[in-house]
Image 1 (cartoon, helix red, strand yellow):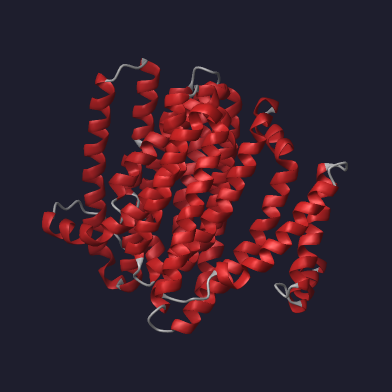
Image 2 (tube, helix red, strand yellow):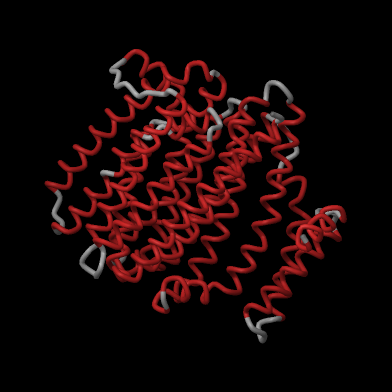
Length: 474
């Protein structure tokens, strides 16, 4: 199978998996936002952030490192599966026990402690999952079954056990347990279909060998994830749980957007990992075309959110969340930059330059921390959105410079930035001119102007428009 067909096949299965499973999870979050209220939903989001922080440490970069190693040496898949997942299970259990001990001595309400413990249990289910093995082998269809099981269990659980404002702990328990059930389902499928059986192995020497390389993946992912979820910690310190809830609603929405973009990035990763050394020209062309396609799609998304933000939040979460419109807009810009950086990180990791990526992510985290400390006490949830946006922009600039220095000088910034800026300026002018019209009409006009500008600058060819027209007619 050709590289392009492999990438498309991976994308289709991941897309099916994410659309169904994450779509159900998103619907579940809408239900929770209404059932738990701003305060309860804020505590639920904070408990998930605790689990996410623990998972950054427990994963040890194995998700990215293991995927690459399985793609390079599929004959070692069984050995890598048992060794690396055994390592994750041990670290997860230790961290979960430490979390319980720390919460026992900390002065906080029993409800908060219970919610954080329930959210922390997330690491146990995640540690068992063979998702990285499946990705490395490009058997995305099996991954879809595990994700679907997780989401269906989550929906069923919250409908059964979350019925009023006092069920926040139940929501956190359902979330973590559903992930465990999904991981067990994926383990069963891979055992039956691929003959991959997990056997727990304590191998300190081999663990040490793999950690020497996977730690750089861990730090890169960790810095990026901390940057995304760090505002929750500062909001918990300087603001109320209601502010956390107001930030959580648009944050959950942009997380879904990031997942959607991440599908394509994940689908391309194993293909790039195997093509960098075999066909360098094709590798660079695939990266460039992928980033251009992503940029063309993301700009209309920003236009739509800018014009319809209040309506989107009111429709999905209720009118009480409409005041988070500016937060949603800022976080949407954050998603655009994050996905462009993610695709660049993807290319660098595939080529073996994952260590410099860690440095770029570290710079972004430092900026996010500093901005959060300065802005959140005064601006609350809006300051949190600004903080993650500024930090991501810094990380993106450094990542792009690393790509230019090590792989190719043709990057998304120096090949298209001028045309994109001009196009964006036209859209801003159109937006300001159409404020008297309905939001939907203004959105459609701005997108039409955007497409016309892309065609005028040669960023969209006539052949592309003709093929789109034929597709619509069909």
